Length: 463
Ligand SMILES: Cc1ncc(COP(=O)(O)O)c(C=O)c1O
Image (tube, rainbow, N blue to C red; front, side):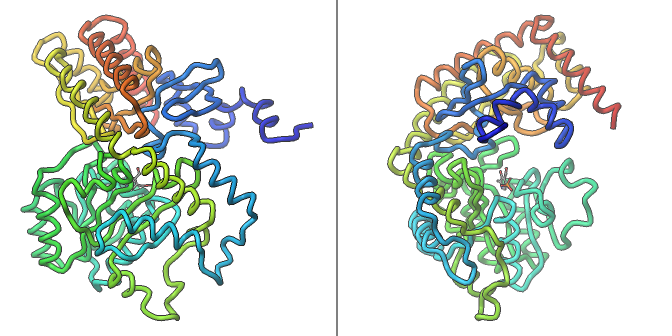
């Protein structure tokens, strides 16, 4: 008889993909099998994943940015064990939480003094939903501004601020009063602030979709314009925050003071979902204005002890291991190395990023043969070229990465912040070798391209 979870997993390990195809997202299983990413991982260690044969994979996808402190960090595990062993009285609900108070204090100590309240929730999208409610309530305005290609989550409120039609299509009507503007376009922001009654402008300090770093005056000017027009500046640091860009918070690169800062992902330590909104007291107090209104926004599991302990331990690790400085040093070094490859390869167009948030953009080159090969792939699926890089990076070099979006020829890296110079060398040499192979149109990598293009066309036919 099956006794423990380990026994259960050992007994049924082979069924992972079948169970998922039958009972969960069959299309996801299809994607993994088509790309050859269908591995059976048995463990995680820092920046590395380990499969059943003992092979180690450098994880530059980082669970979409969740594993900033690396996988299975012993400090976070110890904190979680401590909570479980202490058998605490969590989620009493008619009580308040000491651990939540401590985590709030720690988070605010990393932020400008003007942010003096915290609202906890369970995920990034919930942080965005909360920010919409705080902004609308405090300003008594409905208008929300967001950016083309912006991403703040996939529940209906945050989806209303999503700048990508793939995610929005078919789910309407979404929230009224939303206005989409191009990213890094101050004139567009000024226009909408002048013409509409705007509660808040939601912006990622570095755009996750494609990894775009804005002009130096963008965020400071956006803050000034919002203030002038009585709108709140909501900086979504769910991906960029907690050290990823080489600053604790990405907005620090530009010395901005936002009205709200959103966090989630890495705050979990990679274990327990958690989200947080850090905001100004007047905005917080507007919504929670009297005792009757004390429960007017919240959710049952927010402030649970495991999440709060994971957050505290994560902040400890980031501080004690100097991960912010490491993200800057190793990240910027890696960006510089990768930039050095651009001149050498015809398909490699640009390397962008800040710290450990990086992108390599590919584009069709001048040569006729190379251009035609690119077009064939793009006709099957826009941006498909990026898989000619991610797949061999994975299969030949055991490096896990992602395409920056379904329609972009951009490969994106969001690695744990603990990457060292040996990892950096491994990545740069692997990218060098893989991109060199793409130059040989007709070679093995382009056979892979044909295979993926065929699969993309069949999928489209199946819609
Ligand atoms: C900038 C940004 N905001 C919000 C979210 C949504 O977070 P979650 O997936 O936890 O809902 C994400 C997730 O990728 C994100 O990158």
